[in-house]
Amino acid sequence: MKLEHLSALNKARVERRAIILVTDVASGEQRIVPGEAIAGDVMADQLDAALRSGKSGNVEHEGKSFFLTVQTPPVRLIVIGAVHISQALAPIAKVAGLDLTIIDPRTAFATPDRFPDVNLIAEWPQNVLPGIKPDRYTGFACFTHDPKIDDPALEAALRAECFYIGALGSRKTHAKRVERLTALGFAPEAIARIRAPIGLDIGAVSPAEIAVSVLGEVIQALRKKPLRTDTPVKAGAAA
Amino acid sequence: MLASDDDILARAEDWRKAGKGVAIATVIETWGSAPRPVGSHLVIDGDGNFLGSVSGGCVEGDVITQAFDVIEDGKPRTIEFGVADETAWRVGLSCGGRIRVYVEKVN
Image 1 (cartoon, rainbow over the protein chains, first blue to last red):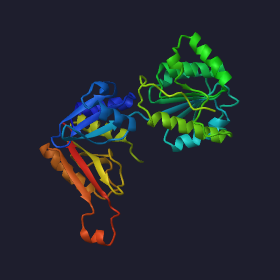
Image 2: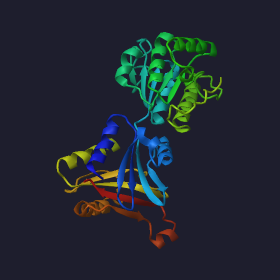
Image 3: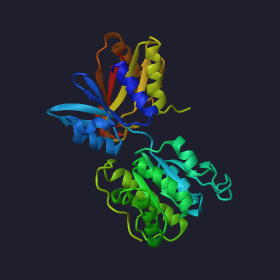
Image 4: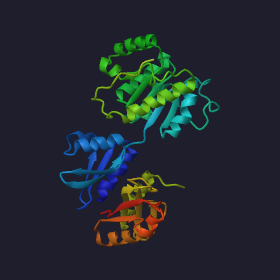
């Protein structure tokens, strides 16, 4: 491996960018393909599939065997609202390997007692999200259904083209949310990326059950479709 | 402390930039029950320091020995490890699985 390739891998990791190292196992020849350059690559389909799975592995191309070292940023989930559902979601999100952050400016909710071992930030989303820098490998679950807390987070999530954006609230609540985001200049296609009502339709009732349905939806968004924002996204589940 | 992949490849870069000979071993294929998944790294410097793993400690010694040759001649190698012993299969000791490891020098 050339030192420049090794440096590129390490740099991409620090900067939270996806990257693939393609190795011709027989000859030892290697090249680096940054995530954003995959679409134009001769092995586009294979590289895209590898990136979506997030796993390194072997592929064949034109009779040759290549090993793909796939490096994707750790997937983050940002939860807005230190509510009951978030308390149930925190431990299972951790088990699923998600890097979880909970944000809620209401200090009565955002207490370490309620959220042991969680990266909990008692601040307004608009104050802390610029520092967190959401990206494609970041998901958002908004649980406060309070526009002044959820909306700034939804705006940031839409702008960052996050792989998952879900928002709690009834259809009526969501209709008003759509109106507000439209007034802010977001296109209907962008707003349609918000999954509302949030969560897979498994008939969840209790906070813990809703947490499971949301985690399922996050995993579905991560694994079932390309992390491409130009791919049409199926609207969120019902009920 | 367990080293994450971040630490492992970052260390390889540090070693190389410090002028050391460095080899990277990567698990490129597994069959059966393999202790470390495809993509796992072990990095080795010319002095025998290493970080990471490609197995549960079973084959690291051999990989490190071969890594010295790779650092020496610069040619990448693919090494296969596994339960090739017939007797082992006959009595059903296939617990080891098989792995293929690619060892390359950092130039």
